[in-house]
Length: 280
Image (cartoon, rainbow, N blue to C red):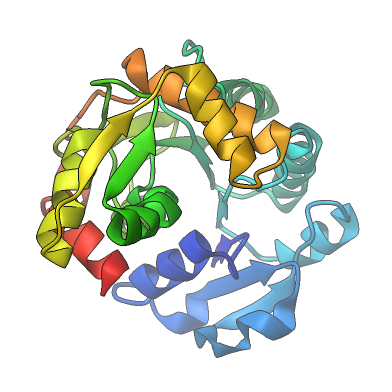
C-alpha cells in the first residue's frame, strides 16, 4: 500500500493521478487533512493532519511506502514533518519519500533550513528513505506571469539568474516513479527541469503566448520590495520574494541535473508550453 500525504494539494493530487497509471487504485491511499475534499480522487481516503499525530498513525496503518509532501506552513514544518516520520516508523514502512529543496543540506537557499532539518530527522529515524529535492515549480510564477500578460512587464530582481524549474506534473511523475518502482532506498534525487531559464525567458514565453510585447523589468532589491509593498503584499511576503530573487540571482536554482527526465523517461515540460498552459 502506498500512502500519499497532502493528497488534496496541487502536487498530491497529481502524484495520485500519476500513480494510478501504473499501480492499482486499491493500493493507493490519499491522506488528507480534510478527507471530504479528496473524495473525487478515486482511491481510499484517510484523515491525516500533520498537527494531530493520532490521525497519522491511523492513516499509515498497513502502509508499505509513504510520500511525505512537505507542509506549506513555514516555521511549523519541522515538528509537523517529525510527527509524520514518527508515525511512519511506528507503521514500519519500507520506504519514506520526502519532497525537499535543491541541495537542502548545503544550500543557503532561503527555503533550505527546514528541509535540511527534516532530512536529518528522516536519516536519524533509520527508515529507508528517498529524498526528492524538487527545484522550483513553474506554477509558482503564475501570478507574476498573469500580471505580465496584462501589463507587458515581468517584474523581479533576479538579474540574469536562471531557474531549472519544471511543472508540478513533472515532479509528480518523478515521485510516482519512485513510489511505484524498486531500488530507490536511501537515494537522494536532485530533480529539476531539463533547461534553466531566466526571468527574461519567462517574459519572452508570455509574449509568445499572448502575442503582446512583454519584457523583463529588473529592479534593485530595494525597489522590488517597495513595489511589492505598494501592490499590497504583507511585509513578510515581500521580504521573502525579494530574498528568493536574490537566491535566484546567485544561481542557487540554476542547476539542470537531468535526473528527473531520466527517471520519468521523457523530457520535462518546456517553459513555453508551461506558460502557455497557465495563460490558456
